Structure formats: C-alpha cells, structure tokens
Length: 575
Image (cartoon, rainbow, N blue to C red; front, top):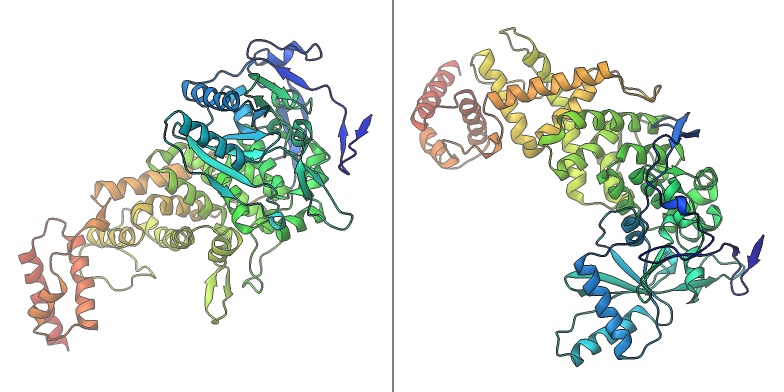
C-alpha cells in the first residue's frame, strides 16, 4: 500500500519509522536481530555482475554488523552540545539532524569527519548567523560563514552554508521537499518534513538521521537500518525517479556499493543502465562532479569493483567520454579490456605497492585503466594529434592537467621500459639498439644499460615504479576480458619481473638519479670548445657528458673533461 503526498507527485511507501536512542530501541516494530553481530554462517547467493566483462557470477550476500547506538567522540560531543546551547539561548524550536554518511559510518563503527546538519524550519545560513550571535554573547570568537548557492540546472538543488566549529567544517542545509511542473525536471524547492527529506536522499543507507535534540537515530524510510545490515544498495524511492532527479546518484550508488562491498539492487542496476538515465548523466551533470566521484572510486579501497560496475552498467563511455573522430576507432568491448587491465594492476599492487605513495597508486590505476587507449589520438582545433587519454582527463573528468600529463608520460615510459627488459633479463654482453635512443657513447654493455635506465628514470622521475608496473602488464601480452579472473601464474610472472627490474635499478644506485647534477655545465663546455655562443653543439655535448656520468658514477669532473677532450679530438680527426 502506498500513501500519496499532497504536495509532491512522488509516492512514499508507508513504513513505520525506526528511532534508535543511544541506549536501546524504543520502537516495538524493529527486529532486535538487526543489531546482532556478524553471522558468518549466513550465506545467501544471487546472480550479480562479475569483476569485469558483461557476464554474471555468484555474489555472496552478507550480514553487516551495525552498532546499536552511536558513540560520540569528545569533539562531536562538544559540537553538538554547543549547537544545543544555541537552541536553548534563543528558545528555538528548530530540530537539528545530522544527515547521511556520518550516521551510516558511525553505525558501522567507523569515524567520520564529514558532518552535514539538516534544519527543519530555517536556512543553513540563518542558523549559522544565530551561532555567531550566540558566540558574541558569550565573548567568543565568531566564525566566517560560506554559502554555496543552489544550481538546479546541474542538479544542485540546495543552498548550503558552511562554518567551522572546534576545527571541524560543518555544512548546514534545510530539510527539503520538491514539487515538479508537468514539463520540467527542475523542481520547486520548499521546506519539507524529515521524512520527505529522507525519501529524497540517494540511498536508504544514506537516509538515516541522528537527531541532535533527542540524541536518537531516526530511520524514517523504515529501510535504512535493514539495508545497512543486509549490505544492500537501494534507493528510497523508485530508482529511475531517484536517478533522474539527480543522475550523479548513479555514480554514488556505484561508489558506495564498491566501498562497502554491498550488493546493488537489481532494480537499481536496470534503472542505472537505462537510456534516459545514461543521457541524463551525460547532459545534466557537470563534468567536475562526475570527475570527483570517479576520483573517489579510483582512490578508494575497491577501485576494480567500482570500474567493473561502471562498465557492466554500460556507463563507461558516458563517464569517460572520448572526443569525436578518434583514431583508431575504439572497438566494441574495449571497456571490458580497460577493466581487465586495472584488475591486473590492482592485484600486482597488492604485492608490490608498498613503495607507492597515494598519488602514485592513484595515477597508476588511472594509467592502467586507460592502457588500451594509449595509442588512440584525436585532432584538436589546431590539427595537432592529442592522446585521447589527455582529453578524458581534461574534458570528460575535468581533473588536473598535471594528472593528464603524468598518465600520458607513464604510457610513454612503459613502452620504453619494455625495450630494456630483454637487456636486464638476459646475461648477454651485447646490448641491442633501442628505438628511443639509437646513439650512445662507446662504453661496455653493462654501462650502456645503466645509461639507458638512468635516462629513462630522469624522464619519469618519482613515477618510475608506476611506469615499471604498467610495462609488466604490457610485456607478456596475455591480458584480455574473456575471463573474470587474473590467474596466479600471470600474477607471479609480473611480480617476478617487477622485482627483477626494480632490483637492477636500485643495486645500480639509480633511484633518485634525476637529482644528479652535471659535472660540467654549459658554460664550461663552451669554454672547452672555445665557443662564443651556445647552440645545438653545446646541447649535444651536455647529453654526451650526462651519458658519461651515468656510465661512470664515481667519475670526477677532471676525468669527465679529459674524456671530452679526447672524444672531441677523435671527432675532429674523423671529420
């Protein structure tokens, strides 16, 4: 049975709301078993999406341990006490509710520093002004208030006020309800009840409130606690309506499903992959908001699962939207190959990733995700060939230009690294010519290898290990999207190769080689050659002297100059 809201075209299911006090549930309708510890023997199986490719595989549902009460830390207690002091001082009847993710995480026993407070009868900026007025009355320092305006065209429906209390940034926003005109997807906003606001949230697990006035958890959809405990990603209202209201919620559903390893509801998956929802993601959501969600996924604890959902829900090219007229054309199913590569990289990183910092790991995953696109280009307005990967970063995701440049450089360095693998693996004394460095000074084979490795590392600098990771994925040419697993034998080969090359770099003292200062600078070269101005000849000698330094790590400036004089004399006689 459904009850219709007189103020909104949306229909709200009739659920008995659940309230949880800090001590015990007072609601006779709530099943006490919701709060029992994890039952390891409980296993329910249904069909869901596999890690990559558009096939199905069994996914095990699980029972998640949910705390019976929210335990505040000292800072949270001080913040909430102060907010209650404001209400008391001005004799306000405003209900303050912490909304969404903070409530969810606290019930899961996790700390959360993202506090969003919903108000039932005033705007956030109005309440922030009251907070400052109270602080003035007590002789305390007031705080600046930031206001982020609503932007309905981009599905940003609420004005948000933000201020800092006890070194914590807090967002304040009013509870909302929405009325829609018949021919418009942009709603008219009004103050709503807490229950109306809960149903307008993206997911049931994010629709929970913590009422600061009463110190109670409120589950006003009647499903938030249940879905949290059963590990389900479900929308409070029908998913299609929820997603068309704010299409970014599709990506949020994917992110939370991956982050918590929860199961996406079947109806949610059908709605997320529907044409009108996919079109709404492409047309209605700013690329900055899309990029932010994707970046959280890639930086999160389950990036492969997230990208797998993006692919299987047919959203890959909606999110990573390529430019027109790419060359070569992107084949059908290429998104599955992209996910296969990030899956392989993630598995290798679990074994060798200890030496990667956060940004190196994040950009390594982006670079592996886009490895199948590394040779795909498009023509810009100046008829210049640009890597498609650069376009995706700059235009489709609106991420930093430096991220785009780093990933493109990683792709280039990975190709160069691969040309050195036979030289490192082989015990042969003869060094074969590599395409990216055909002329090297005349030194022994081992010294030539050190020169090539050193030059490559000086190009890619701190990202040489990520480049090495990429090259191990490409080297064996055995990754495809025909299987949902990355076999242990393939994994072992890559870990072994990575460790062998990394050892070759470190034992030769090449880590941080990009910090090496030249023994002879350009002015000294000009003096030795008796040149009045610089030019191509000086640049050529700068490169040769760097090679000499790489080949002779213990060499002195005097020895370098002597070698240069001899080489120049020999060159003059030849010419």
